[in-house]
Length: 96
Image (cartoon, rainbow, N blue to C red):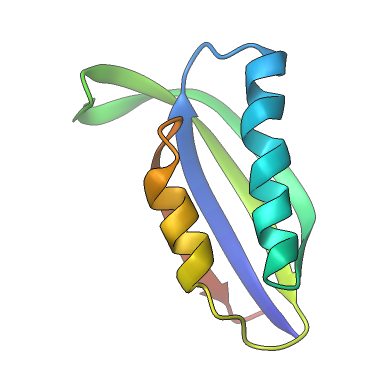
């Protein structure tokens, strides 16, 4: 089983309805590449070291993803690059 840590930043101050509009399709994309979200953590609003798209702060999230086999992450990366509400992301393979 392959495990990944998916860290991403959203614009701070989004309401729950707006987060649902981000998280729902995001989870669907993960399922499309035969993955699942095993855990979600909200690190809250944090000040950024430098402005991104004119914003001085962002909401930080970390999701723990699991895949039965090594996934082809190309479609997922393409989706993330096109999603305007996710301002930065990092996907790391977990060794644990």
